[in-house]
Image (cartoon, rainbow, N blue to C red):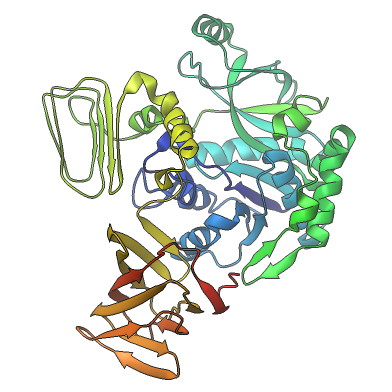
Length: 471
């Protein structure tokens, strides 16, 4: 049987799940439904599928270390991670993965999956995949149509013909998101299915069709892969070449234009988690249809979602309301307006607010930091360094730093000096001093950093050495 290579698309921002989802930590990395993130659940449900190869994941610069850490957490150490220098939509992302897959296997089948969907019945996915593999091996481009449960206006639809052999049905057309009345007509007809954004085809066949309809994409991605550079565990596509690719989704670039599009029906408890309303639908609920996460207390509330992250959240007498709290932002919204969260994010971006892009706690390859206090000419951070990890050798032009160790052991380089600090010990890093911080121990290192100076921005870092390959 032809080897099957999962291609996991990890480039979305998930703005409709703000304030939990941010540009630097989008929804695929969130643990919304259990202890594992949506990305981790996507990968875990593929276990046991026969003749499956190492996955190829496509992501961006800002999320590469978060992705690598989540792979490590679930024991995946053979993944290929491609870094897009900029977003060019799904058709170029898949093309880059297909070209790379051909360097690893003769002509693999590619199972293209978004990284942020929920499938409650993995066995049903495996069964649908088994039905689709033979057709994909013979040159069809398969998509998986979701058996619709209600007239949804937030999804695109697929109109499919009758199955001629087995479970594979020809695709007659892709249609855009309908209004309520049209969606009901689609449901009543029995020939329309939700467009899942999941695909199965051979790498060679996809590239042939893409070259027929959008040759500039294939040309740009081929050049970007040919000039790619290995960066630790990542393969960095060439930015200048990739920038020449048209920005096209795979549906428009290929699936709506090919005469070999086919579909297999998938009825597996699918949800694209595209809004807080979707999170409510996919989550366990109490007797009043409420979804509660974290330290929250509800009184006389019905059909609500309350997600608390950093403090107690209480709600009284609410109906159909979403409340999401983080350390630096709170969303309160009528559940019927769940698709409009992205409008708030657009306003935050327009006003240059950092809350649109990152959380107060920021992930780094060595651990994380949390900005717990700011003022005129000072900033206080809580820094956690993973076991064996090291911050870059660096200096600052505008700020000095005081470090106080809370727990663990710190190996400090400070100018010409190297020394160890343990719990309750501290040190001072003057402006301009070359310094670094390392955790040589077996437990996380936690410290408080007090910055003082005329400018405290993150861009006042001059890196001299960095084991993580950052500029």
